[in-house]
Image (tube, rainbow, N blue to C red):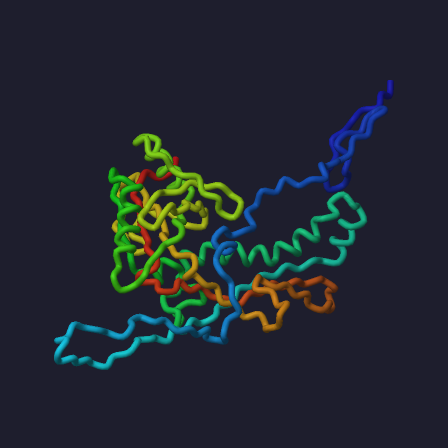
Length: 335
């Protein structure tokens, strides 16, 4: 008796999942691709992007005004003084990304029609890749000098901001952050007014837990349409902006004492966003984009479409010595 029987097939020789009497099962996929890959940078979205003045980008910082003093009203004397202004340069850095699209495979994908948007998404992700590289570098870029580069990366906040402190394990995070803001506001030479606190989301959660444990009410703050929590400080209510690009460490990175075993140093940046600038070289013109740009190279012998993204930019934390502060908070590492 010759019954028809199903057999296993080499997947490279046949696409059928099952062959049998009255049944042929073939591979089919959902048309939507599960895609939760991060493509943005919270800080880059909020920081002010401006056309660079050149390479290097240059600006002036005023560090003092004319000096005065008391004098005898019947014998008035004065010493001539004037303002102090300092030239500040910042070298522009370059970020690139490239993807090549083979002619045959892209045309097969188009002809099948099931994943019609995959090519457009992959093209767009060339510039998104630049954004993802820029995001962490805004905070922890390895270069150490704006004027005389030592690496090809940005000079991150960790290497520009010099006002640093550490909140030990067991000490109040909220009190520590408020004390740091108060010390910044108490500056008699400069009019300092921070506008936000950026921190790793895990640190934001530690702050929320501490507030609940101590019955402290954190205020809700609307930040560009997203409601976040805020801390009441001497500078007003400062929003706690969670940014996953801000790291935590378990060593002596960024100039802080190493935490004890099982703990990490979570970074928080108290900043005046008005004094953070991202100068961009974009060729000029009214319509020139300040975001990463995409170029398609001409087809050559292999007929592959080549897309290259490029962005010429830098990040400057102006008045870095007094307008901003960096705080490391020692707490348990996430499980």
